[in-house]
Length: 352
Length: 264
Ligand SMILES: Nc1ncnc2c1ncn2[C@@H]1O[C@H](COP(=O)(O)OP(=O)(O)OP(=O)(O)O)[C@@H](O)[C@H]1O
Ligand SMILES: Nc1ncnc2c1ncn2[C@@H]1O[C@H](COP(=O)(O)OP(=O)(O)OP(=O)(O)O)[C@@H](O)[C@H]1O
Ligand code: SF4
Ligand SMILES: [Mg+2]
Ligand SMILES: [Mg+2]
Image (cartoon, rainbow over all chains, first blue to last red; front, side, top):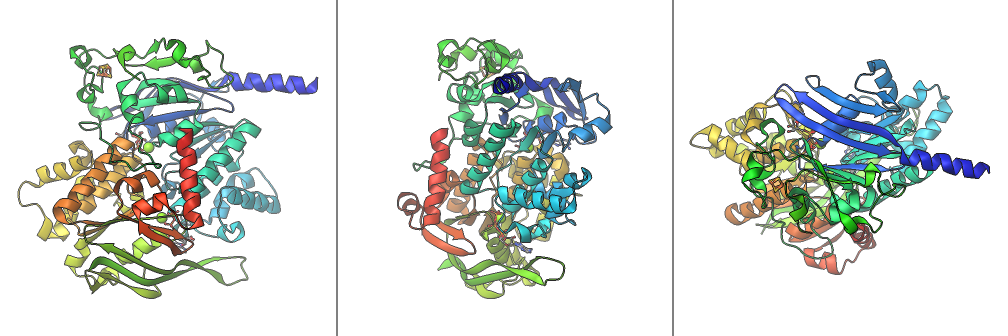
């Protein structure tokens, strides 16, 4: 009996979104860097953000926790546990950050304090929680060991500049996990890590997901990692969503020419390949977004209409293509998590 | 003759103390490394996080002084960066792993590149500097508008590309790239890899390319050196590395990469 009720609670927790981002916008004096982005994250699930360098992934992720540059103004809604974080008082947001939501920053060197040992930084939130010194130390060492730092007892006494780039990145992950968050925002968490270390970090996150229902917003340019980890993905281009839906389905069978170009270009390790063909033209800056569909100057499928008419993000009837279990587990067929959305006038014509 | 010749390189750092009463421990970051980069060669340096790759790179740049060993560039010894002639200083450039802290936060991107040209007039563009600036930025996929912004107003991948543009603006003969394309999507990444190949063909550029991404290695490296705990455990042609990896660590590395790829 008891077990059953636990299972029901868990199943419920896993299907209803814990974070609901609706119509998120981020405006800078120079223009809107993020424009009407919506997605959800469910407990025990990962929502991935992908897109070209400069497309607004970090801005989107940081808007969720209110860590935007000073000049930036966020709009829309970020519902976390039935409270809108965008309008919540800063005091509440500070409470959420680190405790309920952990953040792995893209640039660990900027995020870590250069004059504090890494052990102290990992333990900070635990000390604030009033844990006894010995307990803090034990937990810090455990965390450093779990992220694969060699000789944690010794390394805990290091300063960030005494560590390698990948070691700093892993310390950053330990800091984010220290407060036992329910959601982790991980911005390129494994960019500096060799594949064996990367595999270890991904396994750690998967373990926390399975055992504690950890949810994650993962920003990564590495589509191999994305396909491996994410349940849902949001593909961004020049600050807007161009496609979103179940991760595997989107990456295997895109409904937007930009996603297709990204997904079709992943170089292989198993076979020697020529250097991939870059997309023609330069990435669009969100500040000088081209008219109509922002991708039109580079799109192989573009037609006259694309230069004038902004394509709406609309639901695509993926039919049976997605029927075969492509939806993230826990999602029922008519749930939003399973829907395929594309912002292309001719989405149905994008070949597999 | 090799462009870059590293012999018997050893670097030891003072590490953290185990407790306040104990003396500082020592870390052998690089423990006897021999490595060559031939003319117009691209040599990849791969290996576990913390194995000493960046330390080797920093020695080549003269930012870390090794306890032992020698480094020569075109037959001339490469000493500490302060003692290098302007010509030598310019000829060996590096793209740092951490672009955020290697770019001057108080300068705009345009000023950063112009400053590099001011310090090395021999390679400064003759004509319109603004146009030349726009060109070096376009080469790495950045629009000219970026020139007026400070590094803090750029995305991670944009900073990384500014760092590449600054190094290439000095027309180096040897470029040391430390995870220079690690935060870039495949499209921008391939644009930069192609740029490096073009520079090799047209300007005889040699490259020491540190990366964790084996797919990138496979695309551009002529040779691959694998580092593990301060020593080179394998140094072989790129083709052999992928087909017949000899060292257990290399095998584990390839295995992990294939697992990830198989899942995708
Ligand atoms: N502080 C800032 N002030 C002004 N513009 C900024 C600032 N930070 C970022 N930008 C701009 O906002 C846009 C989105 O940046 P963001 O950091 O979200 O990109 P990203 O998708 O994370 O890219 P990357 O993959 O390179 O990290 C970029 O064009 C960037 O130049
Ligand atoms: N300034 C320093 N003081 C003390 N130790 C250092 C210093 N710089 C590097 N180390 C140590 O030297 C070792 C090698 O570091 P290095 O940065 O060369 O590794 P790496 O191979 O570049 O790793 P990564 O792939 O994570 O960037 C690490 O154990 C690191 O902690
Ligand atoms: S709307 Fe037009 S330009 Fe935009 S992605 Fe679709 S076909 Fe290409
Ligand atoms: Mg980013
Ligand atoms: Mg390094």
